[in-house]
Image (tube, rainbow, N blue to C red):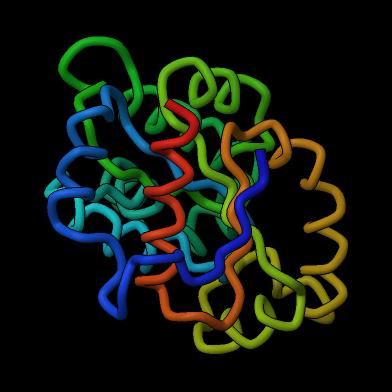
Length: 201
């Protein structure tokens, strides 16, 4: 199901009304997990979405760094990507797992998390998966603001992003909800996600 991130009809300048947000929030019975490319806005949109729903926000990359007690670029440099993906899988399994850890929350994942078959299976089974999508130009502009992307240090960032986006598309497409996030405010994207979740549930 594709939902284009355009302003919502009858939502007014502030987006969804508080009563409508509360109604949708009551229907949500599991974590909301944002997947998609680096730079697409998963963390920023996730924080906004969590605040709207009055739910905790968790950034998987931050949790990985806490568990490893080192920054992600250092994990890549010292141990390589396979080691990082293994740790990422275990952290996400804990965050969307059964029991108390599966409490309602908004979780932003790293760009490659949903590519891992076991991580993807866990998210699809135990969460509401939302693919935040964007064009390569927007991704390049956004990732240029930070210098902490290990996968972009291996060549031309635009070429790497374009290649990764195509390689990962078949995996991202398995998410329950697809949202196109362009240059519009993150609040608009968050409102669109809520409407899409309401339709999907």
